[in-house]
Length: 372
Image (tube, rainbow, N blue to C red; front, side, top):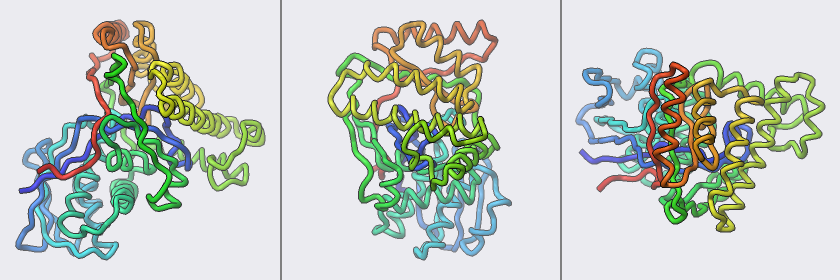
């Protein structure tokens, strides 16, 4: 059985901007989902997962599009990818898929995109070798949107597919989609080790679920804000002054986050592009958290505690990552302060009666690939 892997991601800056045609700046993390695959003699897909022992899912190829409500939630992602390959006219056959995931589920590190992308590249190599990376991203996103019911943009799948080791991926979503992957992205060096820095992930242990209502509600509010201004998306809003025309104060706050977050992505990307010490981006990360907390209202008490404790212990910047309503925060720390920052967060969680957080360091890692 051959094996393909796809990583989770951490977004350095740029939350809730992708579905508004904006800018994002993720890195892939060294935690991956593995997909083992081999052809079968019959016309069925058989799914197993090391994290779901005993939960084997078997679906006939002819039934792929009609089984989404009759299989476990985790299986809808890989089956959705398979169904999309078939729907787009690629000739597929029966296959065994064995999944093993190391990306924490619900931590805001895009475990679902890693799962979908690992299956997508496996199916490309088995059945459709001419499929482009852009089409793989679109297949994986469609599987999450239409089969799993998660209303994501293209950030997570793009990061899992396109990121490279030692770099952050600058993605201009509008141009990337318009150019079908031929333009709109850039690999920007992100050298933490060379500056004696580390990026600490703080998993609060409070899982978020994009298929729940909060994420979709925020997306709808952004669409309503754009419509109130007569724009196809908030990316087309030229200035903050235009937001005064949005009558609904909640929609106006959501739009303000998107515009200021886009500006933060551009600022961070430019600093890194110019070779600045990454410590310089720390305050921008912290500003992003305040915006997500106050204007977009997707943070939680545990995420706020993690960010505050990290900064008090000497982090150069910290913020929640992912869609929010739980999950993880990141902190940019000097290498010799990682332990102190971790202990500060643990003590704050203990005082607040939160469950102990899980912490680990990540580095910019490669995107999806076949493991030889």
